[in-house]
Figure 1 (tube, helix red, strand yellow):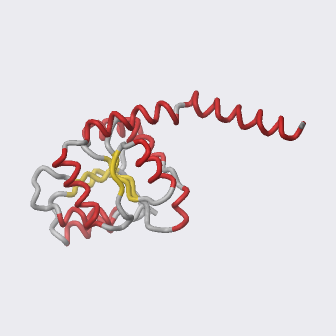
Figure 2: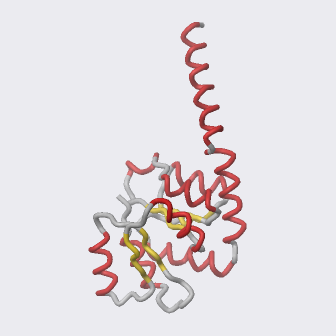
Length: 174
């Protein structure tokens, strides 16, 4: 679902930049294959750290300049809002998003990062260079944290849930 080979495509285009490193955290169905492909392509700017306990994820986000959230370019993912997106935004990390639809709307509305066409490593690399060269990361990260507090906190979600129930009840009884 994540289509993470896009990382290798972008990394190969950015190999000459010593200050750009890709760190892949986690272990999924593609991990061994991706690691093998990275080695075959001679990519020294991609590191695989494997699966880590959930409580370590904030540490990785804090060390990151940019968080990638990506899903394959498929219609089914257009309504998806991955938890990774919300976690990255809440951490204050700018997001580089490769998902069309609702997730893209959130990133654009919140001005918390940049979007690119899913599975397009060339465009992803261009957006990474833009973020690094323009030093927009800090502003975007702060906007993301604020947006999550305003729109995705448990209090906000609970209040919306209660309003929806009250509206349903009032429509049925009216």
